[in-house]
Amino acid sequence: MVYIFAFPFLIAFFVISWIFNQIRSLRQLKNERSRAELMLLKSQVNPHFFFNTLNNLYGLTVEKSDKAPEVVLKISDMMRYTIYEGKKDQVKLEDELEYLQNFIELHKMRYHKKVDIHFHHQIMEEGIQVTPLLFIILLENAFKHGVENLTQDAWVKISLIAGNGKVIFAIENNFDPNELSGQRGIGLDNLERRLELIYPDKHGLSLKSQDQVFKAQLQLDIR
Image (cartoon, rainbow, N blue to C red; front, top):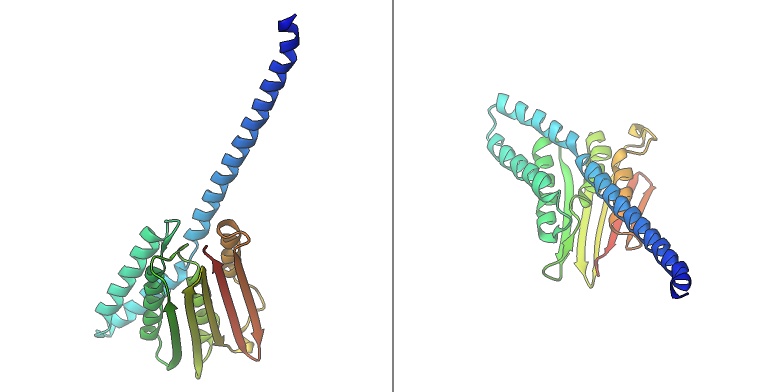
């Protein structure tokens, strides 16, 4: 009689165990898919920037410019960071800041026109970690759709403030409305998807365009 009464409980136990195993497998599969998607999204970050810079480097070498060696070193540093640091889940905010500064310096070398660039940054705490290659998408967007399409009076204002469990990256740039295609770039879609995967409910992204000025702000909750 004991075995008869125990049999339903054994069946229930095996059914519940099977359900839990299925849920665990689905979660594991979802995590693996998310990691694979993140790797794909990371691989799409700024490849055309490197192509454009290499073309510019070719021009400098043809001209035998003194800037060529410096450009080679900065490209090398940026590619090393993209390949090795970019695949990590987290990096030091200071390293990400240096990456952004190298990007700006390379652009200054590329252009044969005056561009007014201001970069204010303040990191109030040590040891802050962030996901790599997020801010670069907004910075690259400002140069690609703003500076590169303006023949004169181009400007970019950048701000990076970190502390009290938050990182706020803001950027403004002017643009030529006649040069806008009306189509949203893949970079911003890439950024939004990565934020959804990495910082769910812990980020805010604002994109505004008014009076020939584009404003973007990304806030991360890192607590």
